Length: 410
Image 1: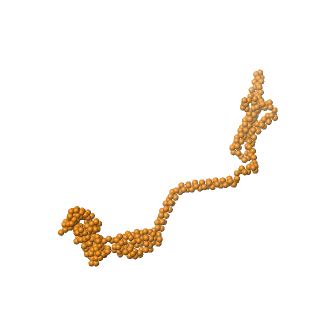
Image 2: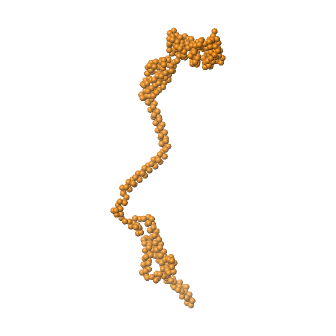
Image 3: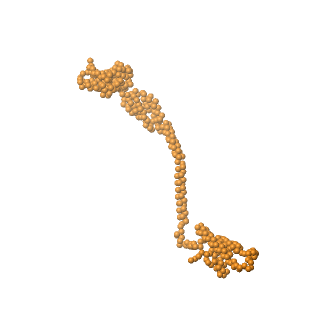
């Protein structure tokens, strides 16, 4: 078994004592070769300095030793001879210090080599590294093309720039979201306002919306061509600027128009829907009969009495008076089934209206009030009379709608 150096029974001093000087020098030189370089030299200097200090401490002082010897010398009769100090102890200590310094230098040298392996230097050449051979011309096909590498690098750079720009745009959009929202609101509001103003300008002032066509609807007794010629003064005017006051004045010249409704049909048409007056009674005149509406307007004249039209017992001068308006109100309140059977209407006051039916029976109606209830009561009385004695001429009194009376005519 190998023992650690320094603990052998044979010390280095004993070995060197039996070795020639040349062999000792070669051994020292071989040991020092382990710490080549700066760190090895540092270790050797440390060892040599330590040897010199130990040797200086162990070197005896002749004068001091002589005085100590004379002072401590026992009397002659008791003097005993002591063995002399072994000079090999000092050299042994110096050699141990030198060996320790050499080992320290070798350790530093190994640490330096390890650092060079981990971070290689261009000037450092590893003696154990395999020698790389220079590629021959046969291996030229396996060397990557520099142009291909440059193209690949350029593509990667472009892709990286695209990704960076995408990320930058996303960040900009995220941080400017509120400002973009406000800007979109302002832009939308401004666009709506501009469109509104342009629409108003085009509708009011532009000839693009000018009136070029007028349509008349609802005419029966009125001449349509005369009505168109009366209102054609509005042609060429923008629809938004038509003067409806003037249009009303123009239509007022046609008494048969009871009412009318206008409708604009952009971009160039105006539709006029007319409601004509409808006569409800006939008034006898010297030349024939005038057909009069509830307002007392003569709708038309006819030389013959029209069928199904009640004859009002008034003179032409009384048309529009209180008696006529009362008779017209009663006739308007009659149900259609009863109105078609009325032949004459008379009234002396506003509360004394009498109707004559085509059967010859008379009806005392009274005032125009409660006309619906009176009409229902009259229908019930007529039905009852026809069921009992239809051949007898009678008079129906419905002036009090809650108490109908049937009288025999005198």
